[in-house]
Image (tube, rainbow, N blue to C red; front, side):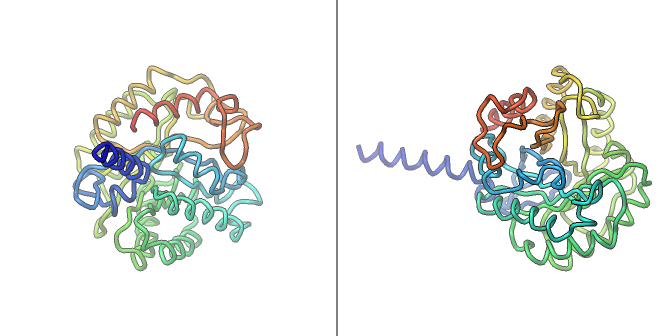
Length: 316
């Protein structure tokens, strides 16, 4: 009986550790092109992104985070702070925006999962970004849970423009936080990753570059382009992806989604699915009837949400 109790205790301990990735992996870093744990072993994170905070603030709370960790098996959660778009964006409502972000960051730290602080914008706002990330680094930089995503999806900016912006924001973060991972966006909604591979930011450690895909629009060509970037030495993190068209709507392309997942698994690429929201579109995983604070039953989880949840569960 004593052996059974010890075995049971060991199993319970293993379950606790596996449910707390920060406890398991510790301080993340980048080795060559691979995200690695504190002991230098490859790490692959999987999780969900919240929708724009200024459109779906009701989900930015500890209950929703707890649900994503315990029921969806998320090892990383992305908090997406909308910068423009409406009067509730960061530029017009900075205090409220930052508080909603802190709600999610604090909850993720308590749950011992990684959290991405995402500057969710398509335009350059260098001054505001430097000020915001300086505060985040000062307040959270000692927590290994934190990952900074400093420019969600540049659209028509050139890579030299994005690179110049990135270098300034990185410098501000590194003044307060010397080692947490920083994710850099690339032009054309994070599809022109080859431009960054040809001229990466130098002089800083633990940088990765984001690639985003929507399987109904982006096909083998984007996988090939990303493979070439990795071969050139660029560390890649898929911080946003989904199975439908790039509009966020239309049917899920199951064949292409499966192809992308198999490809990411084979390259040991971390990925985050879009999004925890309740908009009437395919990529929103919840229906409006879903509770704000989690405890989402199957009847309020849409097709895309059910699919993603199954994939996330497969990594247990």
